[in-house]
Amino acid sequence: MLKNSGGRNFEKNLVIFSFTIIPVLLILTFSYYPLLKMFQYSLHDWNGYSVNPKFVGLENYKTVLTNPNYFTVFKTSLYYFIATFFQLAIALLFATILSFKVKFANFWKGILFFPYLLNGVAIGFIFLYFYKGGGTFDTVLKAIGLGDQIHLWLGDRSINNISLAFTSIWRYTGFNFLVFLGAIQSINPEVYEAAEIDGANRWDEFRYIIMPSIRNIIFLNIILGVSGSLSVFDIPYIMTGGSNGTTTFVIQTIDTAFKYNKVGLASAMAIILLIIVIVVSLVQRLATQERKK
Image (cartoon, rainbow, N blue to C red; front, side, top):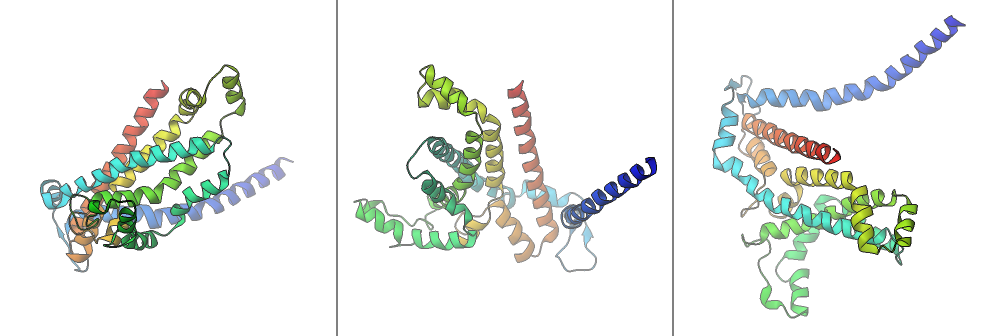
């Protein structure tokens, strides 16, 4: 019996190992190994194709942090950073409303989540027509008597990043909405019933039941939103190509690598972005732990 038991344990461990080793090898091959190579490239002056790259140490990092042409493009991320909180507020509002009994609730859920299912390229082209001169947005403004408020939505430096940030809100609100909705619906219905017996209204339920119950989910969405605002790429790249003051740090990194053939410098920029995202994530985690205490 002991021998049979030992044989079964060996077979069980062998199966577990077999199913585990493949994803681990894939992660090591396509995630961690490229990350190590990118860090190696960041220490060299390399154009991407020469055989013997020149070792420069931390010079690339110094260039990124001191040359305003590289690091100051992070100011564009501020538009998306601010937009993140509008996005979360809208998602939380609709998730709260649709968590209660509402007519055609499934229809409204589909409407809110549908933009997230669309490809970023498709969204870029949709909003290119939406914002172009004489396009959908201008037509709507004229129809409601606001024709004098028409601008070059993607050409005016004072407003083009706001237009792009609005596009980002439209695209990603559905994802945050779905996460919030799932968290709210996981709350025990008996809690609401007890609150109603005590005379609580919808605002009281939101303030004293929903918000405390989904606090960790709110922090999770905040960190995802902040990380996303730092690494925005597809919307501005497709709609403006990063021109006219809409360049983000990721667009600048890609242009540095493939347009100007400075792969070593671009690798340093990517490592810096990774470090910033990790620091933001750690700050969020520490803040969450402090709130739990």
